[in-house]
Length: 428
Ligand code: PGA
Ligand code: ZN
Image (cartoon, rainbow, N blue to C red; front, top):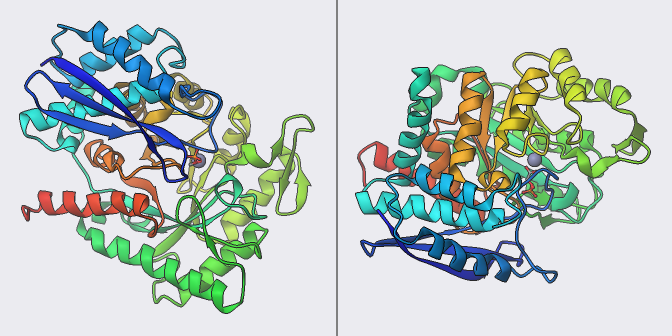
């Protein structure tokens, strides 16, 4: 299979910022495209996005011509061949030559066109590629419908309010309570949980005359809540009024994105209106995990704090997922370091943090080999593209972070989950 054309287009993401659409045209005439997402609370080890000073992605689009000519006449038997080519051609640690937005656009668009050309769904191709990487280990991963982690209240860099913690999530408990039952819940049951609790929390805030808005990932945002305990208490009340049961049906997750409330100069955290060191913050987190049904905590410490993460893993219950996002940036080298330090038991997978599908799958493979729960994730600046859902299903992920049950770019990921479920059940 050969690529005959790469076409770039400057489009907008869900925040109205520029991003790139890459279309790959194969020599067979089949084509497909990928709209690349973009983060706001980025880790400094992420792949570099090519943009000019006004945010335009034209520099990334210009690179497509260079890649297209370099690929001329090269026969690609698998999407992994293309990704290896892109990694070699870029030749840097962080894709600063071609741009991570450029390479991911080409990588995913080719995987999609390749799948279309042979008549299989994107998630099937992902599954086949992951299993080819795992073959030497004698491991076979099955496709799986993941449980969504619904963002419900936004703070940090995703909302213009006083809440420093970035994301509060409600999560159907299937993964945490009864992993063997995972496949038995229809997707619509999960979505109903996310939508019902979101609507009740929104109503609660409006009834109390709180300022009400919608954050970047579709969770609600309010000026009237500035600490995590009040936030979690309000979400608990919304759950109680829904008829779903805390602990039995629904648990919570938080993404601290703590880079945002950590001061590098003073080494202090400003958390819930008080100042802490990393040592004095630990008991505060442990109490929060004890007082509320929190089963998941992401980036509780900044991106270089491998040892502080390890202290939280050691002191919290085994069933709590301690996840690295900015800490790992979907980078297998950083994941290896975290595994060696026992810093995490869960990792966020964002393909645009590393720049190719193959490297994202390498990070998933390392997670599988070390019993780390891997969670594919959207970005706060999203597009209507739902490839991340196919990626999650194809890698057999048990959980998926795709935002709230409002805003079209978030809902697109959940609609894709419904479509895949239908396809797997034989109902087209
Ligand atoms: P980002 O946030 O896409 O703005 O980086 C998402 C997250 O931190 O999980
Ligand atoms: Zn995060």
